[in-house]
Length: 213
Image 1: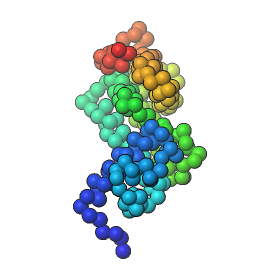
Image 2: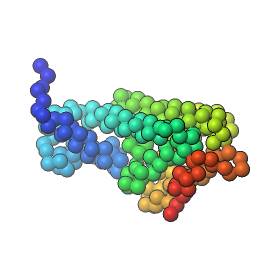
Image 3: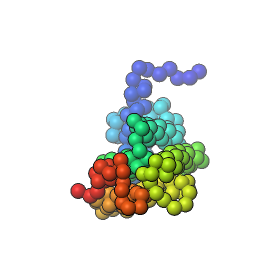
Image 4: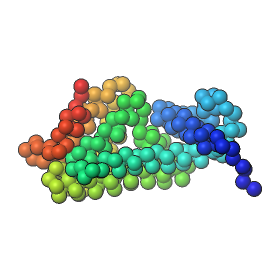
């Protein structure tokens, strides 16, 4: 028989995920234990196992929640009929907000530990990046059509380049504690996708906002 859960179970599970997510984004998945979460929340390790029987279960739940939140951000970036260039700038801003909180992309951190992760987590990490690349591919194709983006090669290859560039820019900015490094890399990436002649179109204000202060 399944365990009967109390009214605060959902809240406790959410708090566990919140703490675990922060730990992964700072230390990595292998850089913390259930004891760290228990100490932070002042609960027993048994209570943790009640919600997430294994650390692998916790990891899968973390990725699923993070991917869902990222999907919401992508949906918001494409709302109100925004031009492709504006959507792309909004996408880069998602990464900037994470780095501004002195954290790294959850799945970027997990990718660095990929070989040590359980297979279900590995598959989920790949799924996260596939989701991002698919969204970007659609945006890039739209950009070619509406004239706000220009790039050589396929939209798929360019989408992969964008994800790799932003994840890498976060990683390199981290040891310096310098958000301006990421902002400069992001701004240059977006500028490189602007149409010939330097007209950024509707994305102009967002591109300017991405420049280092």
